[in-house]
Image (cartoon, rainbow, N blue to C red; front, top):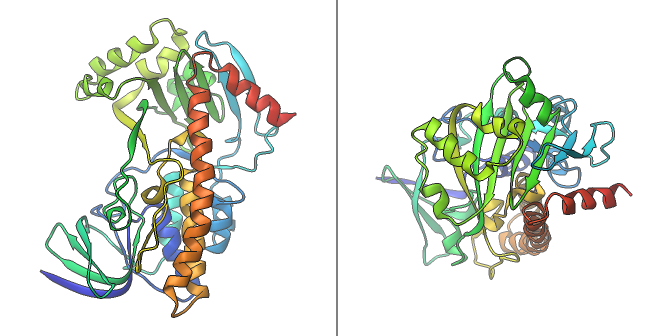
Length: 380
């Protein structure tokens, strides 16, 4: 089945791809965005994001959506607690105490904001990419699962960790970081799980010890989203039957046998299924030589561990700066891409190094004392 030719095509309708399309739209440039999901409601987007002033918020300003974003911010979401495995609170910071300028917003609501800001039909749903290749004339060809073949003068990979566009510019593949997470939720926490709600507090929870921990945060719908986190071999998750939720809970909690019951309850009392996550990352400083007619943004370019909270922010910043570079160099795509990539590579290297360092800090044998000291130093 044949498709069509596009001056520009974006692969991936995550926050990065949508921000790119929106900033281009504001600048008078329209581009299709191809996404593998059947439609916008195909899967839950879950999780809270702290949106940083100099990256994510700057991108939303470029998109003309910052005021709308502020209306979505979770009140009190910047609060934070650090506990040890005994449930002892070692550091607590209220939302009012925070000077980070990193308000919390629901990822799904932010995605909806971006989707609703685009012209109808911008996102081409149910368009899963199976392969990409470079054509001899500098264009690129994309083949979808239904056999559709499309070509583009400029192909932009915003398609995440396992990007199908990345191989056009780089042989690098994400590698396991040595950290596995199991996600779970506690619904209507204040009413149904008051003890867990008290443990997490109004914002973010770090409960850390012995190279493992519970990371959690309060969601805008009143639920708690929790990540049971273990520094372990990649095979640990493979040995757990996640189709049997109660059995999976017991297996996860074996890693936290001597932890405070109130912390263990974050998994034991969870509602719904548990979701396993192997945390992977590209090498710190990942970059590539300029390849005409193609580039990457977000996790496709520099997937990193979540321990610096940079992933969504830097993806949106990449997208806004790429859009601005393209708008600023009409008819000279290569100059725009070179300028974008130079800045992106430098920025991503710093963020990836911070993420890797924070992973070590949070999952060190003496955690959470290093993290407490870091926050104390920042406050001082």
